[in-house]
Amino acid sequence: MGTSNRLRLAVVRESTLGTTPTTPRMRTARITGESLAFTQDFVDSDELRSDRMLGDPIKVMSSSAGSINFELSYPPDNYPESDFIRSAMYSTWVNTPTFDNDAIADSVVTDAGTTTDTYVVASGGAAVKANHLVRATGFTNSANNQIFKVASSTATTVVGSSLSLTAETAPPAGAKLKVVGFQGDSGDITATSTGLGSTSLDFTTLGLAVGQWIKIGGSAAGDKFATAVLNDWVRITAIAATALTVDNRPSGWTTDAGTSKTIKVWVGDYIRNGTTQTSFSIEKGSLDQTVPTYIVSTGMVVDSYDLSLSSKNKITGTVAFMGMGGSQGTTALDASPDAVSTGQVMAANANVGRLADAGSQLTSPNWAKELKFSIKNNNRQLEAVDSASPVGINSGECSVTGTIDTYFGDNALLTKFYAGTSSSLSSRVSKNSQALIWTFPHITYKGGGNPQASGKNVDLMLSLDWSATIDTTTNCQVQLDRFDWFE
Image (cartoon, rainbow, N blue to C red; front, side, top):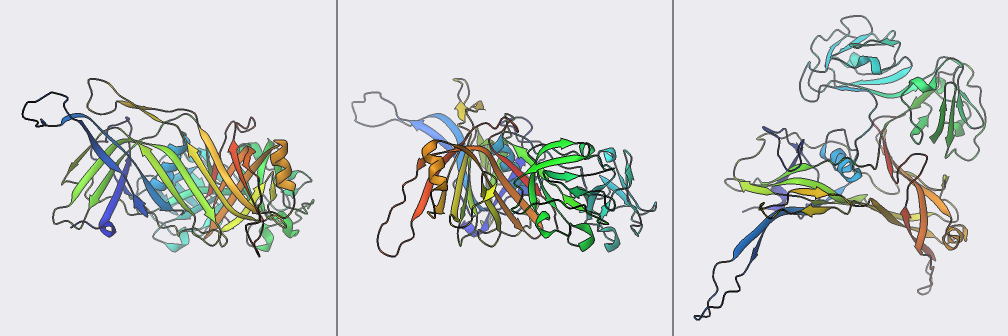
């Protein structure tokens, strides 16, 4: 008998909408529940029969749809949690230079330490620039797992300085190099009135983008500004060779020469809503059956992605799919799908580092108690009279809406609502030196706004509905930054 505790959900990205790749490499998804269904649609005959009987039902269509529920954890690249966001955004991730053996030893990262201070990669090494910070993980020799500043690179090498590497001629399946930031030389990076400055480091060479978030400062005293308030999260608004202009600067931001400091700055991947469709084949396996049954839904595209950050609760979400065809049988698409990702579940309060309106943290007297949002793609199944299942998925408008509940401490947010003043929202969640930042750069509060006293001893709350519209600076309505590592 099948039970929910033995259900396995495995996912593979499709190259062609509705077509499962040949011998697919499936990855196991993390879920708390699901309603995925490969359905068969029938109609009854309208024929008149003198015996008052009904003939066999007539099959007219089969299709796939449904949703999964989840608890938020860090979404590593190419895992289902990351790919579902990719599909919801109708876009692709813009990743920092990454070299990942991804379960195949000695494939992308092919050597460490045989040549002094050098990691060898199959290709693409020139994307790593001098002064980038690279995080090396998954190597057999612990000395090779470290964060280092890049001295130089070529198409096939990434070189540091005084790294004390141990020779590994065939790095294992888990070996990975990823750019996680950049670091200035001693005294080079400064804090200016509008952001960061430099003398020799050229910020335009580092792959940064306007609208991207950065985290300033490392954990060691020599790698961060002496002025503590400067070692915080900010968002880039302009990039010049020797100047980064930023907003969302913390209260008390000031200048600092960074004397004798080798300032570290952390950067991540990001994704913005766009027009590129991503689809999946999703397989449900009932593993506790004597002969497991596998139900496959194909052409599954995310129709909506919902997330809820509520006080004293886990951060939870729902992904709803619209799909095409499917099948069922007793043979898995992949007998040994990849295991689930390992990031710990994130929660409100403990892991939400900042929730901001118009670049300023919502704090006294209008603390935020809840933020919910939905990214909806308004997808439609396309039907052809000569096909027994939908033949395509068309997208509609990208609709990004949400609600925010705050204590009604003063009329600052209420004034914005009544005036129809445009604003922005952002929320940062971090755990175990990894972070996610959701940004809605141009929003309008357009509903709610009625604090009410429902009885005695009740805090007045302000609940506002909002919607996001295009931000002309970043050309998006929603952006997600993910930091694989920060200090």
